[in-house]
Image 1 (cartoon, rainbow, N blue to C red):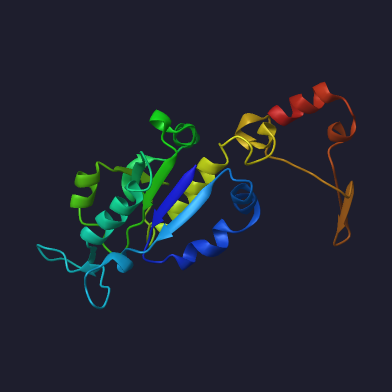
Image 2 (cartoon, one colour):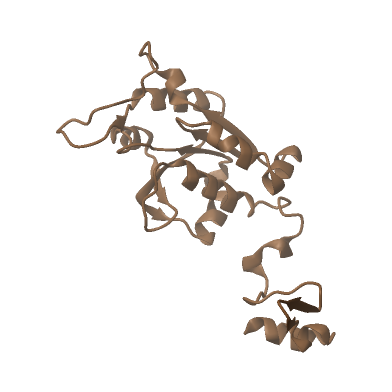
Length: 213
């Protein structure tokens, strides 16, 4: 799957997308990332990408044309793509939504994520591209970059091979809220904290029952 991210702050993605599981998945050819800055597509000599909103009000609104130009460039390279705009008003991201995107709705394996900033994006972008607004929660953050990273992470982990074993998906296995590792007895400030006996028993049936609670 290919993730195309449109953002005014491309440097924010460099560290996150090049570490740990996402890095390995990219190296193994399971996923790919391309980052685009709409400023590079602006006709303004200063590469301006936003302006004051019509009708007044605080803040700035991102221009439609630079974003549309980026999407045009992407669509000239790929057959089909799904376009999502990061928005607190959008459809709530869930594991089911992530699975649906990962499966490639209509065989589509190219995902375009548009990150808004300031007061948002000119509404004509959504209308022209027939884009879907998507939200990572009932709250507002400074820009669409963090939500885009969350979407990439949640979708990528649903792609076969990204996590190595299917059992690595926490939501697909029985997992209690309590987890322990060595040492068996942790001494902290003069007090001992022990691992529950059932986890040391070797009785798999009892252990699975414990994890359900």
